[in-house]
Amino acid sequence: MASQSGSQTGRRIILVSNTSWYLYNFRAALIEELVTHGWSVFTLAPDDEYGSELAALGSEFSVWRLDRKSVSPLGHVGAFLRLLSTYRRIRPHVVHHFTIKPVILGGIAARLLRIPGIVQSVTGLGHAFSDESSLARQALNGYRLALGGRAVTVFQNEDDMSQIIESGVTTNERCVLIRGSGVDVERFSAIPLPQSDGRVTFLMACRMLWAKGVREYVEAARTLHESNPNLRFLLVGDSDEGSPDAVPHEWLKELEGDGSVEWRGLQPDIRDSLAEAHVVVLPSYREGLPKSLLEGAAAGRPLIATNVPGCRDVTIEGRTGILVEPRDAAGLATAMRALAGNPGLRRALGNGARDLVRERFASEIIIGQTLELYERILSKPQNSTRPRWKYRTGATSGAERAEKR
Image (cartoon, helix red, strand yellow):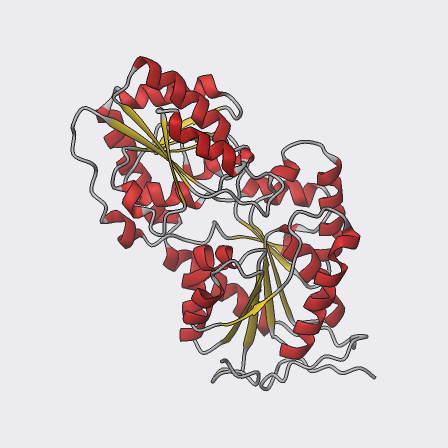
């Protein structure tokens, strides 16, 4: 168990998310790098069987109870108070929040405690921002409280950053663009293309949420399978029952008798399915920066994705793949048919996709930018105003120390 007094650097960081799965799946390399650099790393999230994996990386994992389905502010009072208590106990130098509820609840708690480094990762504005809904307005109001003060907000794509800045939630000076969580380009480039046997296999890998475009993928697959049984359609990922947008498990089970789509559920290693795939597909309604497209691109697979924020950052028309409109199963089927019948185009787009990932999205690039951000935040002089809550970082020389009067 990590010492509360800190490691050899004396620095403590808490990473907070709405699932432990997210922290392990997207931030494992960052955790390992922080530990290597001598930080004491604390991870905080609801436990969905990945808490032990986070501990194995060298972090101290604590369970944070959070109702992910609730949209009522009153339903999150307990979760907010638990964050306050944990932050006061650990006294971190940096807190880094991921996903919307930790960003809002954790950001407000960190501002109240005047934590020196507050990093807010907007990992995608999500289905709540896909339309002009009351939920989107509620989320924006929460962001106004959480992204102010000394908080630095990290965006994964320019569209999300522009939307939040234009809404007046925060300023350009307090925003940073870091494109995703990074991908291990060597680990995925070692996946050879499937042997040519006359069949073409498409792969969609994601959490099973309607906003990912699961329905459109299944509809397009059914259309194409009727006319060309040599086309194969894989769907990989489990139903996220904690999300209000979850595709019901029963609906997914019914696909087994359909014959056109093969649903595999959650796979520990997506490379097994990538090894079978010729094309990677993601018809999402909106993304931060989709890891499934990054991993498919790193493996040299051409991409088909929707022309929406996040997806179009990786899927570049004519270079890495084909863009289609969201919620358009017919258009998706047309793009899939085009790549199925053109192996030369698949090869060219796949090579372009691999080159793009190496240039912009490799893990060492993204993690380096994140560590640099932490250093830059902590090197800045902190506001001398004392907090209303008792709080002391216990930091080494030069860091802020504050106590209740």
